[in-house]
Image 1 (cartoon, helix red, strand yellow):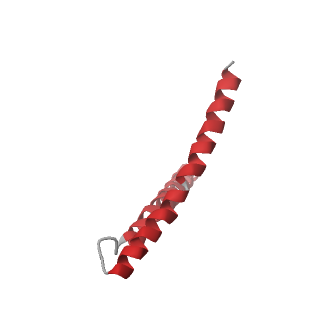
Image 2 (spheres, helix red, strand yellow; image 1 turned 90 degrees about the vertical axis):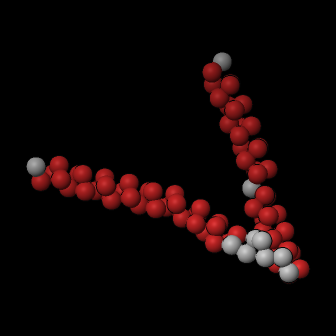
Image 3 (tube, rainbow, N blue to C red; image 1 turned 90 degrees about the horizontal axis):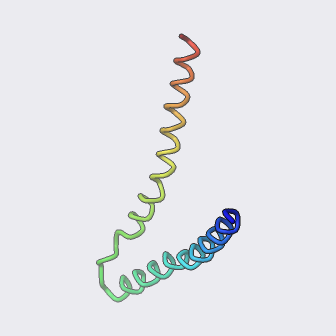
Length: 77
């Protein structure tokens, strides 16, 4: 019974995830249209997207560095 519930949950999450992926392109097109019309409220949208996109990579990099340093420290001791 647990496997069936897990399978249904994965299918639902996959379905709702594919629906949410279109939102970024829609937001970007609206901001671009507003910029062409002279509205500058969304001028920093691309910078914000790049900032948010870089955070997981920085976190994984820091985890790798700390893991490496800890293994190196354990090897020396």
